[in-house]
Every structure is written in C-alpha cells, then in structure tokens.
Length: 134
Ligand SMILES: [Fe+2]
Image (tube, rainbow, N blue to C red; front, top):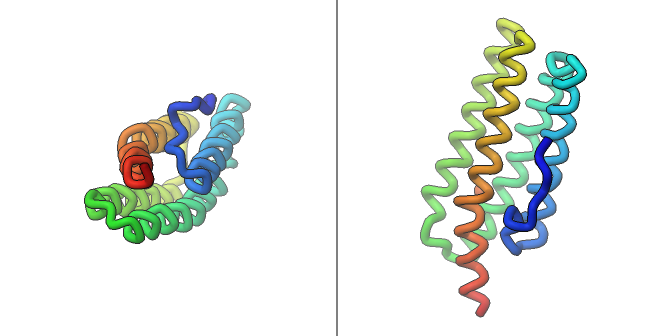
C-alpha cells in the first residue's frame, strides 16, 4: 500500500490529482493481490494504466512544452518507455497468462517506477515551474 506523502506533490494541482488517482488504482491492485485476487485484476489494471497514463503523460508533456521546459525530450522518453513496457507486458500476459508471483512482481515494478518517476523527474519539472513563476 502506497501512502500519499506531501513530498510526492509537485505543486501543480492538476498533475498532483492525476498522480493520486494513479496511486489509488495501484493500491486497489495491491489490495487485490493480498486477497489472492491479483491475477483477475491484472488485466483491468493494465488497461486502466495504459489509458490513464496516455492522457496523464500527454497533459504533463503539453504543460512542459507550453513552458519551454529544457528537459522535455528526456522526460517524454521516460514516459514513452513506460508505455512501451506496459504494452509489452500486456501482450505477454494475453499470450501466456500470469502466475500470482509474476503479478505481484509486476505490481511492485509499476509502483516503483511511478513513485521514482514522480519523486525525481516530475519533481524537477515542478521546481522548474515554481522558479519560473517566482
Ligand atoms: Fe512525468
């Protein structure tokens, strides 16, 4: 279970709200895993993640471009990599199915990526915007 902490907020209200929604959904999935229902929930979670991150990343990228963020290209590359990886996992699962263990491992990887990305890269962008506005 991921507990939302203040230091995960980057200071852009719309972005923070989307991040919290992602965390909420991942927590739902973690919860399902602890009740041995992770496998059933996996497909739905991956579908949600792909649809939601497509929109969320797009919003973040538009905000970056609109503010001439110098690290835009590198940041977008991270987003693209995430989408590609989740898509690859989804394809693999459709073909081979998942064990409980891979489901839990996968969940951990998604959570780690997201929290790490928010703390490092999204935070950098938040700081950039704050300085710009100051
Ligand atoms: Fe991002």
